[in-house]
Amino acid sequence: MRRFGNDCAILKDFVDNGDFGEIYYAKAIYTRRHGCPGGWFSDKKRSGGGPLIDLGVHVIDLARYIAGCPKPVSAYGVTFDKLGSRPEVRTRPGEYKAADAGNTSDVEDFASALIRFENGFTIGIEASFDMNLPGENNIVILGTKAGATLSPDLKIYSTAHGYMTNVTLDMPTALDFNGLFEREIDDFVDCVLTGRASNAPAEDGVILMKILSAIYESARTGNEVKIDC
Image (tube, rainbow, N blue to C red; front, side):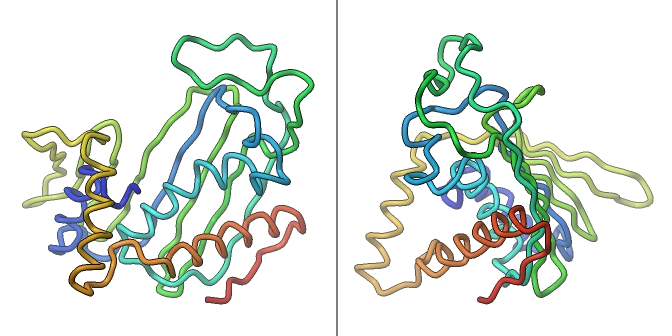
């Protein structure tokens, strides 16, 4: 879904026009300070995992998409279940309600990993439901010509004529959910009607699941895990 965001479209315009040069690293962050919704989200048998598979999957896919969807080759990851869902911690209005006391809560509360790709591109990922720091949702891109941070607004960092430059656009660049899902649906319908290749093909979903499975296996064994795509 994040592939159809307005923020992604703007950043991709710069990337696809060569403004970033070779993209060699991305930091993908989707963390909550206190935000396990409970229910099946905290039940590994039904969810498959915690914040990595629920939140991290979105920013991993977005970072890989921005970098041109290279093929993953390995992952090294760690997961922690140190805090649980902390149902005793009061939730502020508008936040996710933590899992209720007594409900199953056997997923990780924090995960981190390095994902390597065949062209050398690497993603560092952090995802959490609960941690003792403010939450963050951001993508950081490092390229040979420029770098960028995607949230809360797109900022591009580069050099010009020997000077370091910071570029902000004279238009809204923060992620706006208005129209996002409609663009996703429209893309699918257009693919059906015209035969055009999808901007979010099913194959990429399979690759994402292989990445997530490798991270969880790496966390279980303590070893880097190869990814066969």
